[in-house]
Image (cartoon, rainbow, N blue to C red; front, side, top):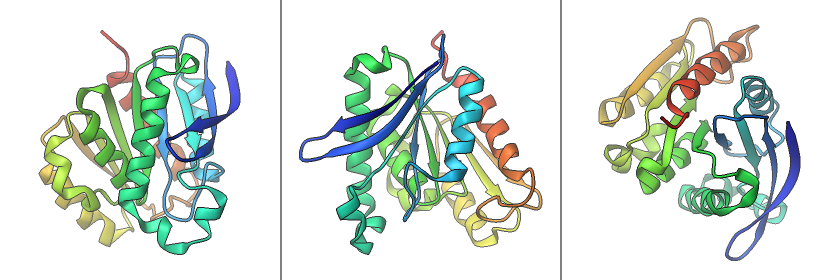
Length: 212
């Protein structure tokens, strides 16, 4: 398993990232974290580690620089975050470190909107998308352009977000599923609930990431 901290060169800045590629990886999942979070998100790190154990590469990276993150408004600037995710994906696509592996997204909270908008931009070049407690409703205008099989995961106790996900689910034209995890809140902090998220995501990626 190859693990390294990387600098992702974008047009105007460099972003920090942690890339892990297991031996015989079936693909790479790029994480789009939620507002106010970073590549150090304990929840995303746990899910990423479980993916790695199943032969799935992961890239966790900061969508904002430390200086940009000090401006609270940047955290909710979806257009900016989408552009960063698109640039980072393009870099990964052409980089030797990715070994030409197929790419998928994992979006948490508002990061799910960024992931789906980027998936709409890339079309069939993104093989799968998973949203954890996400806000896919913030990408409603482009959901019909998403071709990647998309899995929406929401906690049963996260009632407002369930409604938002159902609204987005109806707009998706790709292969899609919505899973509601019993007894889970928005952050899936209850015992075992984040592991359920990871299991669902891993199975989704195993199904749709490998190249035929």
